[in-house]
Image (cartoon, rainbow, N blue to C red):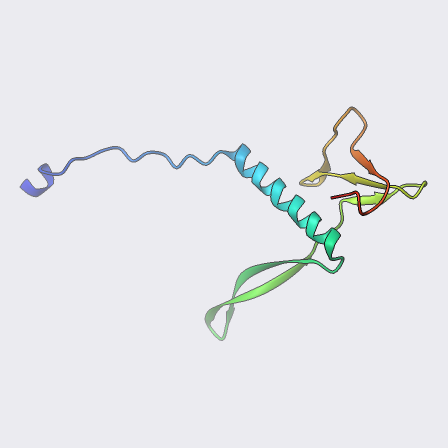
Length: 107
C-alpha cells in the first residue's frame, strides 16, 4: 500500500468533442463528395463494414451512391443546394439554391 501513496493522482480531463465542429466537418466531407461527383458522374462512397462470415469477423467494403445536390431549372441553369441531414439550408428566407449557368461553373 505504501506504493499507492507514493503516486501522484489527478482527475481525468473530459474528452471534449465539440458537436458543432463535428457537424461542420461532416458538411465539408459531403461537399468534397459533391465535388468528386461533379468530376466523375460514376463516383460512389466506399465505406468499410464488419460482418460475420464463417464465424469470423471480416471487413467488407460497401459502396453507396452519392446523390447530386443540384438540379436543372426550366431555363436550363443548374441550381445547387446544400443539405444537412434531410433538410436544405436556406441562405435567405425561401431561397435554398445557388444558381449556376453551367456545370463547369458549379465547383
